[in-house]
Image (cartoon, rainbow, N blue to C red; front, side, top):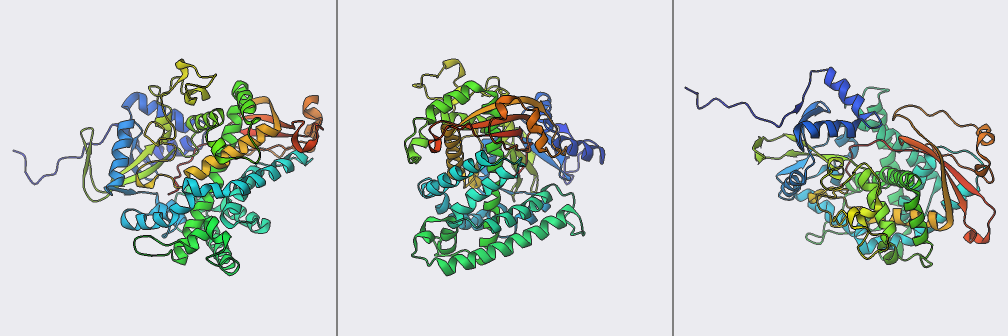
Length: 517
């Protein structure tokens, strides 16, 4: 006879749990290889379906990526039945006041203070500074005779967000933030949260402290130069954070909350933007028909750029959405059961059980996206477009924010910066292909984590003659396929047709588990 007080063993979804040490090595090998994450997901999906158990970050997680799984998880998020479940090192790096670390009422209050700065209509305030910055950067890239590292794209992404945040650029501060952010991000893969001198986590936490000191100084300067009624206070991200109030209880952000959230927002506007840019360029260079169609479309855009015209440019948006689908800049995030046991698919999940919801699993679902591993921007073209073909139509609206295209997450923690990210990528793609011709050469494959040797200027002489007519810039991005891209000025740009160009070496970006807000 069964003892009624005896608790039956908990049943969890099937999956690979493995043995200590061996499973840790397997996890590290997976996340540090160019295609390891997707290969691992595909293997598990074939064997276990869209919900399965796996071991990483020192714990058993339930991975899920089916539409029904994501809908269930996001609905529970809205009901506060689940909460954020970052690994301890990431939670510490984000900070105690970061909205990305919060759940429940405190999360709602912080989010209400942040949302006005990223509402679609308010984001239009950033168009001019984004456009000016982009034109300046493109001109610099085309004019230099030096070979550069991938830092130019990272600096561009950081500069875009900085100018939108503060209304002006301070190159010394931007360079300092850039250097510290590299160290800070390095702590995301730390295996310990102990502040042991010389470890990546200790260096990351030191960088966090320096970033917060820099942000503290910037806040003081902004308040001194821009009173609440000033234009910059009303039209910049930092201005809205400093002077904004919660509509329900008239609450303002504390200084510590402000610093933690500015750090998180700068990161969101830095790393994920950089990844989106490099991924889009890679897929366009590998798909000349898409690049040609996009170049034709943006050549007709009016001047100055109009946000509504960019928003409604069918090929531009189809290319961006398809690039994000095939290579999401963020491939997943974490939740855990809050206080009440939850049930799904016949399983009972107890308090504290963690979930890794997989954006990548959803966007590579063959039942949703035929030939999911192939870039095909026609999936998202409207029916009235001349290039539309019924056989390619996914029938999915990427702007609807549903579980069939969860690029920006879901539930109460859906990404605040969605409209901002869309605008900056639209501006760059439009300006680049309206004013530059893009060519690529010598595609190859590298693995994430392998150091790319510095390219000397002697390489110029070995390039085909078509690539050495002008000046060049080589970007070594953290992507896996590599190729050279040349941007040659179109004849109508700046009133000249001197053949000046930019050569990029692009490596397709490896994936990260990061969610901002």
